[in-house]
Length: 481
Image (cartoon, rainbow, N blue to C red; front, side, top):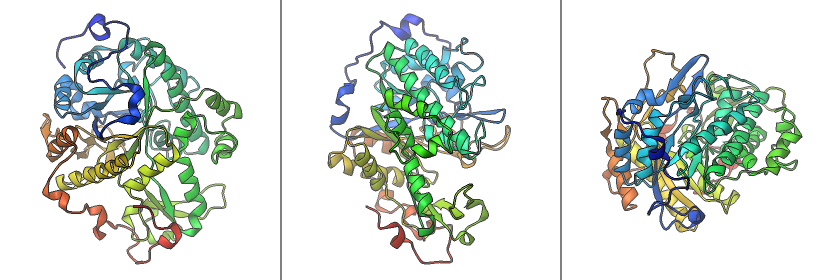
């Protein structure tokens, strides 16, 4: 970071929202003339016990700041998902905010070609004085969002909470992240607070900038399984829409998850009715899609290692193994196209984008995966779907996601390169750099690696249940290509 600090006048300007010459009219989101390329910075600040991990510290962006943003801007990206995170800006007190770094970076983005989608919480539970299950969490996020909007009144696009459903699962059901809950009540409370907090945050932001738009992200991996696991498969596939449906005010007594939330989840009917009465529908639905996001549930658990076994509590469901669908020959894995088509079918009038595309692998693998997602999105765009963009995630790569950011302080961190490789301390271009720039500027790219299928289409991908050549397509059904 340089020593230059922006004054209130220089980063705020006048009180009206920014209207740059190339800025998209928010009302025309559905009519994008061609698929766009966006970018994203892996920026998780995460708490495990009393230990905090910070991707910005690990990848060096916290030091390089605007120098990195110049690289991002040079790619021709239309939008960049960019953090102004609550934990970083107000770590110790809601009344003591540290604006030096965000002022400089947002000041650059205000005048850059690339436009920010401002993130306020990314797989976090807020600063140390709150948590996902704190009754005051929604109001706290609202207050922070108001301060950010007042500071940067020109910013139009926001993601107050990245992946609320996924974060609630790992923080409330699986015990991985703070507050380390392992039951339905902690999960439901965390998710409710995130959704209510998002709604209140957008209300506060729109008081400053009425044109502000919500870009709501989450993982939408689909479950398939054996006949014996059909009830659990149905539950998983209903639950994956829950964050979006809650924001849209769709979770009424007839919703398939309503009884779960008010019984096992412990939410009150009044709380759910509040979300119905005060909906905050996304202006853009963001799908974060990964190769292992689609799951396969198999009751024949002896075919799988014990760390994949799940024992449902308090239900009549059978024990099952939960593995990535692509990693067992017993499953028929949903395609990228079929997952995106489901979004279009369920929310036909809501623009959507693929807001994270990343895979750990060699350069050819990374090119092949981005190309597969780009082609799938392009296909739906040609068919008339309101799909806006594909997002090259991890512009600076990711650290420690192989352990879900749980490596103890001082431990060795596994690094996955992204569009740039930062292992030397200076971002170095990777083969993805040329691909992202070409797709952003021309919509096309040519490389010998794209003439070959990615490993996810070869038998070498199988890790589980090699003992059987039987597939379960007769149970799950042949999935749309």
